[in-house]
Structures are given as structure tokens and as C-alpha cells.
Amino acid sequence: MANKKGRRRDFGSVRQLPSGRWQVRYRDPETGQLRPAEKTYATKTDAQVALTHIESDIARGQWSDPDAGVVNFEEYATAWLRDRKLADRTRERNESVIRLHILPTFGTGSVADVTTARVRSWRGKLLAAGVGEPSVVKAYQLLRALMNTAVDDELIRRNPCRIKGADRYDVPERPVLTVAEVFAVADSIAPRYRLLVLLAAFTTLRFGELAALRRRDVDLEGLTVTVRRAQAELQDGRLFDKAPKSAAGVRSVSFPAELLDAVTHHLEHFAAPGRDGHVFVGPQGGQLRRSNFRDDWVKARKAAGVTAELHFHDLRHTGNTLASTAGASTRELMTRMGHSSSRAALIYQHMTSDRDRVIADRLGTMIRDGGGGASG
Image 1 (spheres, one colour):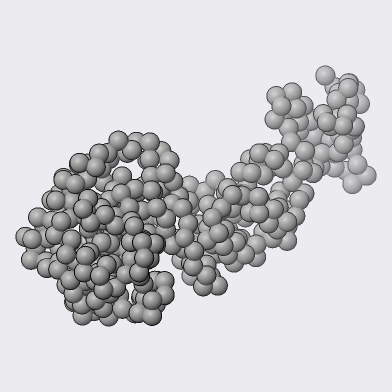
Image 2: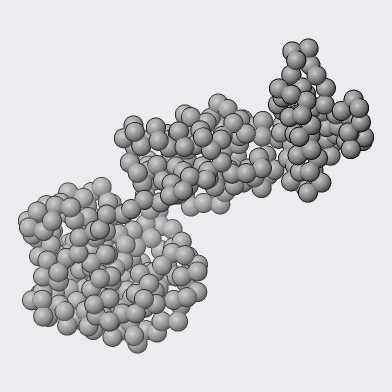
């Protein structure tokens, strides 16, 4: 309760400053010392209401030190990223996004300076400047994650990244090839890459997973390829193999028996020697690179007369669509894909190899009906 001088016994007080505005002083719950509030007020009543709110926040344990957020944003962001456990390629991408899209706006200020209004303005300016929506979404997601940590560190009370829909974007529908079109592309590409196209479509492996395959990963009797790793490339051109993002990423995927001749032919003529030799290598025997493969892909796509919008990754989308048509359940389909989330891994881990064999056999029927020739 306030006395005649506006003082709350043992907690705080309000007083008028020479400027005529009213100041709130309250007892810091951590130090016990009186401290001024961040703002001043036009009237004594407004100041007393503010003092009541501060007292209530402290009583409920919801008060945060206003000075806590006075931490340089760039220094905090640098430490935040350094302390996160990330794969090298992911760390490199995140560093690039923070450097290019976040620090130019927020870097010189403090963590507490990042408000919802500034975040909304920042996002709008990025889009207006022509930054692609996927990049803007990634930047927003990183900023939100960083500010979540700032909340956990009690530097700020609430995360300012609260813009509805800013963490996602509509992905345009990707093209789906017919079986005949898949073989048209495969037959138009350099022979050493023919099997790469076929496995991408009929096992739905990603480019990085295919590039990392070794001879010992191919089971000619069981008609399977086993994914144990995935190739990644850093911005400086270094290639390295990394573990899949989750346990679900390590998997054996059946391929149609109709591809066996193509697989055998490729291993005999194009794969690197030795049990640990890469299945797919470049013309000079070096590791397969996306950048070096791109020209071959574009030429083959044009020669086959398929849509100009077709990306290599669309073969994975095509394969998933074909597998679904072949009768794969959602659980089987996601396991075949090697879903990256731990939640999906738990849900879909019960798929049996027998059912995967059935899916591959049905894909083989599609190959025969589609007129595809799989021999080398």
C-alpha cells in the first residue's frame, strides 16, 4: 500500500522529476537495491500503476532484469552458433544466413533491441529486396531459435519472432515423370550416370546418398542398396561423407529386379575398384560432384524432351509417387525415403524388408509395362 508520498513500504516509490515526468523506483529482487524503471510517466497515476505491475511481476516470478538484454547481438549470435552441435555443412549454411541476412539489421544493437515490429520490418525488407522466400524463411527460423535461447538465458522475457506464417512457405508442386520419361532421361545421359538416374527414381535415394554409395553397399543377391552415409560439399569445394541426420536415414532399400542388369553392368564398367570403391565416380575417377554433374543432367533432360523445370531431386519425388501408386503405405513410403525426423523414425521403423521387396517388384512391373529397358 502507498503512503502519502507515494511510497510502497519495502518495495518502491514514485517521484516527480525536474522535467515534470514521474519516475518509478523499485527494489531489485536479486540485489535488494532500489533501481529506476526503464520508462518515466506523464502522470503520478500512470507511475503508480506501473509500479503495481512491476510488483505483481516480481511476486509471480515473471520479472526479468531490463539490463540483461543489453548484450551485443552479434557477439551473442556468434557464441550461440559456436555452441550448437551441427554438421559442418549445416554450420556453414547457418553462418552464411546469419552473416548475410540477420547481422546487417540487428548486429550492432543489443539482444533486447530486437522487437516484433523490427522483426516484421526486417522480414518485409528482405522480401522486397528480392531475397528468395526460402532464404527469408530460413533466416527467420534461425533468428527465432536464437531468440528462444535468449529467453532461456533470461536476457529477454518473450521471443519477438511471433509473425504468423513467417516460418514456412508454399513449395510449388514439382513435376512427376512417367516410367517411360525416367528411362528417356537415363538413356540420354552419359552411360556412367545412367544407373544414377534409375536408382534416384526407383529407390528414391538423394544425390548425396547415391554419391556416397560404395560397392559393399550394393547387394546383387538381395537386390538392395544400403545407405550408411551421405556426401556433403562445403563452400570451399571440400567433399566429405557424413552420417544421416537420424537413425531412420540408415536403411536398406530394395530395387526392382528389372534393374539388376543395369546395376551389374555399371559395377563392371564404371564403379571404382575395391569393396570400398565408390559406385559413382566422375570421368577421371574422382568423386562425383553436383557441380560437375549438372551439365550432364541438363543436356540429358533437354535431349529426352522432358520439362525444363525438372531438377535431379525431382526423380526422388517421382519415385515416391510411383511407389505410392505401387501400393506403399505411408509408413512404408516414409521408411523407404529415410525420413529425417526422429518422430518419423519411431513411427515408421516397423516396415519389413518383405514388404519393401513387394514395392520394388511392383515398380519392376511398371518398368516392363512402361517399355523401359534397364540393361546396361
